[in-house]
Length: 270
Ligand code: T3D
Image (cartoon, rainbow, N blue to C red; front, side, top):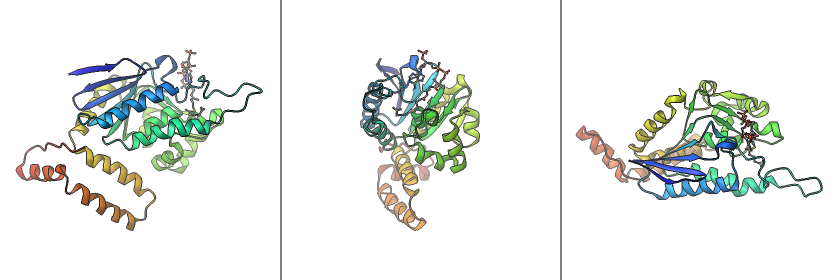
């Protein structure tokens, strides 16, 4: 059964164990204001605390996914002549950094279902998710250079790791619109699907992930991200530490028992 819990800047709908969060400022292509940040982070916190939620899908209302920072918001708009310049670093520290940290520490997998343009921090919001599905008419724009900024919301860390330095620099310096099919071709995203199929494909993937041992999936994300700055020797040690923890958890015992009994497993850890 589907329930709409809130009609606000972030629409929240739960279908079984899959929670869908819809950014809801369609007239401004779901660009970020402080209030939208607060609503999204609040919804993610609530999902993280809710044992019934085993996968989160983030998407956008209307024709866009998210156009990044709302450039007309007084907290971000350039200062008027004579005023002290705004310190955008404060905005990043207070709003974007905690959002990325929240996303990347979610105890369940997170899917971005990119339904339209994803620009600036909106593109990197998607890239911080574990899976990015995009409709064929969607696109990704590292819009920062066009307004004299560097990629933020984790873009400088993510882009070279996902697509390599050459493509990272090309995307970040030129700021061109990258269609979803090209984003899939260069490995920036998981999959490009027909627009009409996006919601169904996201729901299908969400249900599949929700039925998996999500505690292990969250540990997989942390281990793969953490290994980026480790030597192979250190990564082997870290794998032993994590495996030791997971090996005594319910889901491992259940997975092995189900395998032996040739039945479907029932994973419950979070
Ligand atoms: O504060 C800081 O700057 C630090 C933090 C930075 C993080 C960032 O995200 S920096 C990057 C900010 N984002 C952008 O630079 C993207 C700006 N938007 C665009 O370039 C274009 O809108 C798009 C390429 C995304 C889409 O183009 P198009 O032609 O499909 O739509 P449009 O007509 O430009 O936009 C539709 C409406 O949304 C329009 O409003 P209107 O005229 O119908 O009333 C437009 O002003 C509004 N909109 C789109 N993006 C933003 C926005 N309003 C405020 N802020 C936006 N980012």
